[in-house]
Image 1 (cartoon, helix red, strand yellow):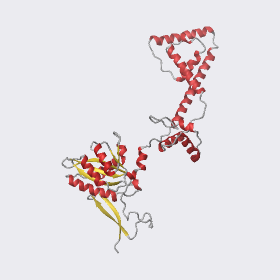
Image 2: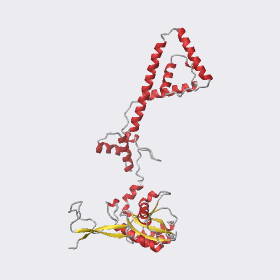
Image 3: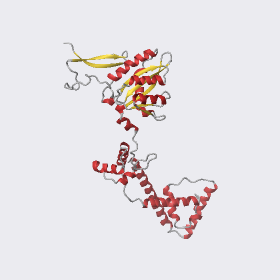
Image 4: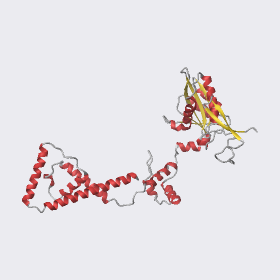
Length: 378
């Protein structure tokens, strides 16, 4: 909407500048025609001498504004202008003439329906993004029936956002956005990935993490210095029970996730393997976010001496992550809520129960704390 108003203001300013310059030239024209022919001839010769002076000294005139060009085009219709043209070439002057005709016909054919407000156009684009099976007729019906915005399907097609390989207004029932797929199947997807940790002796260790996307629960976490496909398959066996409810296993294109491993996962667990696209970590966004959380809340503050110590650190942190760390995406809540987590709200919101006190439990030597209500001793 702002760009539309800005363009309108520019067009109005240009039109006002052109009209004012034409009016000024017209007043000077009527004043000049009252002179005698001898005076006019002398004045023309006088002006030509001055122009010749500029040409001899190669003084280039300043670039003309569009308003000045239109004025020159207007006055050139009254006489044989090629002999008097000095400041530009004849081809340039003709180009101005063609451009002026384009402006004229653009103004002449400005009729028709006014464009939709930018807010409505953004709403149409939003409906297209959020509803992959809708066509222009469905969106037009939704706007008119639910929101009272009456537009035709043809108008919806006009403002339909263009997408690569897809015409405007085409129904897209053959696919759905990856984000929508993950949300719809979150309870049935297990995502896994590796992150790197460095010991105090600068030894590189690899941490394997398996995450249940629906509940954000860490199913399994283990450490090794030499990850292999066989070791990774064993970690998946430890993470996924035989009577699991899952449908998909999501991982990236690391070479450790070989085709043999994927085939074994399918035959052992009955899971369909989803490999993320090349250089697209956002396709495994939940697991990538978990990797960042492990670093920010644990490994950035703990420098393990060896593999066994790192395994113990991660065991404590994973228990805190699953049972004691609030997750905003869960309400807030925890992946494994305890029986005492949801307390009754009978007492005032900003007051503690009079018969309870707050206790704190240290996690990782005080790096984190978990707080609980405990009954006071009588």
